[in-house]
Amino acid sequence: MLCVGVDIISIERIEKFYAKFEKQGLRRFLRESEIALVKTPQSIAGFWAAKEACAKALKCGIGKELGFHDILLSKSPKGAPLMQLTAEKLTYFKVEDLSVSISHDIGFAIAVVAVSVQN
Image (cartoon, rainbow, N blue to C red; front, side, top):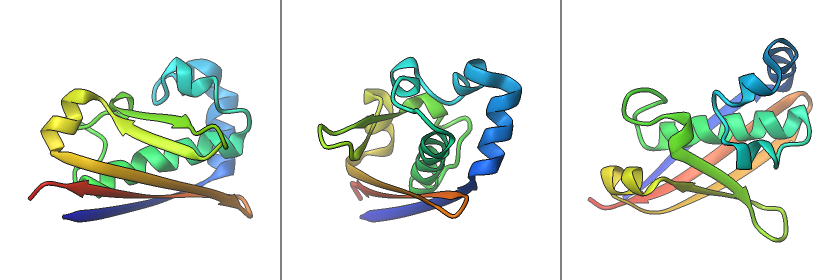
């Protein structure tokens, strides 16, 4: 079964969040390896949207079943976003494959995640 999630966030909201909490705030939803990849408020917002979209695709939201740190973002050699889940969550949600797309424009970041799960 294919499941899709989408999320959009204001880049200004992320700018305000970062101004208030700085790197410590990023650690609430990003691992150190992910923080090393984000260079601008746009990229931070894109990573936030991607993790929220993943939770929506898995039909659970961020919470008890799935936390921000259970979702791992990286980049391909060409700079395309890549997403994976921890081994525990791959098994829990019966995920076969997942894909992410992130875009930013006119003050917003949006992400779409497609997840293939076993029936």
